[in-house]
Image: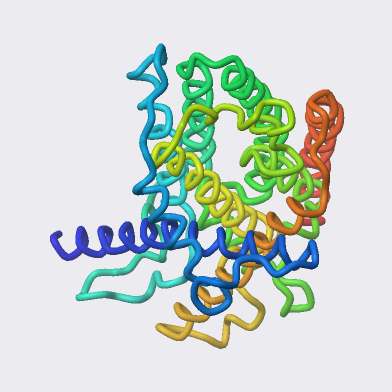
Length: 350
């Protein structure tokens, strides 16, 4: 029993450290990537290739003066960044990021590389907990006693509610074809169904519409350009986190990048085969574990770069365009994808 608890705790620590490490890494990638796209140098003074710039930024935020404006609702003002950070950290625990069910550690089955591999409603847990992140944003906007913060919080709540519906319908298409709410089963089904007895049948191909809907909704859910209307500096200065400084601001900043990592991991899991890869049947044991983790993180890195690429390529939408895209564009497409999956399963095409 103690050995089993130790293995579970070790996986939890690995995931937590990995998510926290992803923040400075993606900050560096974001800044260097933006410089590359805009044909400039970017951070290149602190460490080789500017690799230590995120460390310096973190030190600056730690020692920056922590100001709390007058007339804020102090309890909710302090609670808001905690809620956002907690929700961002918790959502990743159901995502499988490697094989390993047949591997034992200290005589205890590893059970796969997922913090909660036995959670039978993994997808519902992720969607339910992920939807709580909007409370941190709304509380920050309302408790700051600032009209720009309040408008940012209201915008974000309307945006997240609007885009959660097509996102959930896109996920339903995957769950319908899988017949299970466990993300491990989603990955396994994509690995077991093969084209030409070799190519894995990832959901990316038969459910291409659902993939496009989910990726677009993921950009909106993470408040990334071109959907960052909650923080639009040309209209709202900084939006819901306008009145935050020092580590309270850093909590919102870290939450965005952790949510981006989780969204990318979910895209990989639902539509791109998760940790599976062509030819994996030739691997077993620890070799399969290492290869599967490598495959997962290669796919994850691609979608993280896609987030950066899109941010520095597309302009910000107007708010009416954003809402129109969600309700009149993505929602009908997500419904069409769900109908297609039902018909395709009835005809045994997928």
